[in-house]
Length: 516
Ligand code: AHR
Image (cartoon, rainbow, N blue to C red; front, top):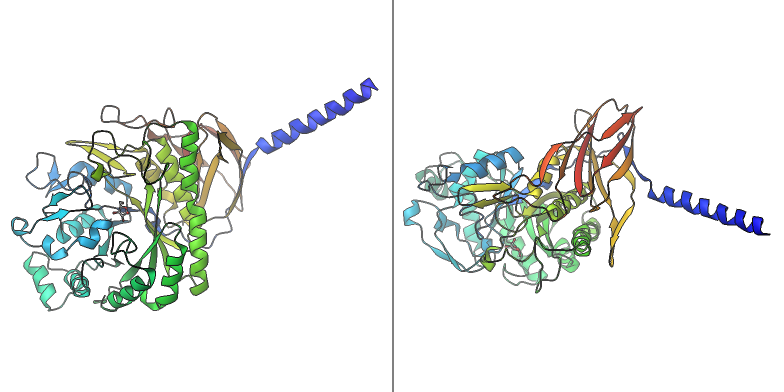
């Protein structure tokens, strides 16, 4: 009887162990021969508002500054953005856009009227960075401009003249004015936002009212020459699905190319946000879970869009996303200056993986914001500059741009602290035009190295290379004293054997593996 009991117990135990081991086996299958949707490079877009030290001090220091500059643009930031190959840059806001009057920002800088930036710190805006400075910057860094026009406090005439000023090649009052201000050729700007957050800082409108306003504004947004405008309607605040429904119902599809949505990852709540650098592991998972929620958010907005636009002609434009914490102690609360840790690197990795996943609908996304504001890719301090962990993830993810999205199946173990529980691994896969398969993997586990078996089906994998972004801890970040605490480097801890790849993902890392 005793022996019998012992046998049953050991059988149960070995079943439990093998089940446990099975559940712990992290596996990924990538279908290299099953893709049809291209990942729009504009998913990797950025956003520079007249806010804090983003434009002034970050991008623009003026030609007389002691900070090394080229015609007023700081050289170090410009080079870093060139290296990042950013596909587009959204400007001038944000909330600032709906109180910006573009004519104040052209002509002799000394003559330009000043204004108060009431949204952001109540500082005086001297309009020294205006249309010419922005568009010439985009040219220099090789990016496409995305301009958001003023609907909240502006007029249709103002917007339509701005388009004429920028895009018209013939003889007209606005084209002549542009030439008088030193720009002969039109810039042919394609991406135009019709207002920003018009449910809030952009005019506190109802969805129905804004939909009508949109139709009026869009009517007078003219195409000049061969340039075709891509008109983006101001979209929903996070989970306001009704906003999307009303706009999709009331705006004819031929009048709208894109519909935006904004989603910020706020770890506490809007009244009580939390520190960018001080957090425990449970709070870390809270942040990442909230970032991961954008998957459900996109899915739900997309389902509504599908009802009115089954052919997916209207792009979903996530033109503001990223983390929003308390400002760094001692800094102006209206300037939204925050540090950026490995936690932010994971937010970026998870979010970009999700945007890729929805590449059939998501045509653009813009990280908020470029320099010194919110989840910035670059921080500056007078003459000095650092690249943040988020910068390195964008750099790592370059191969996904314009690649074909691949389907995959992932089995991931979980990571759990306190009340939070999530998959430890987060993946996206794509195929470049030359046949290289790109697999981005975030191992968000703070302490555990994870071995992942990858089966790249549908190709004869012969070689692989990898790069990694990591740092010593989840709250590690770069400072002006130690600039490379978190960095990108070559990664070699993987084996490719008969087409099967086994990769040992360090704890707290984001890896891009490229298989040929
Ligand atoms: O990115 C900061 C602000 O967040 C933007 O100005 C506004 O559109 C949003 O509420």
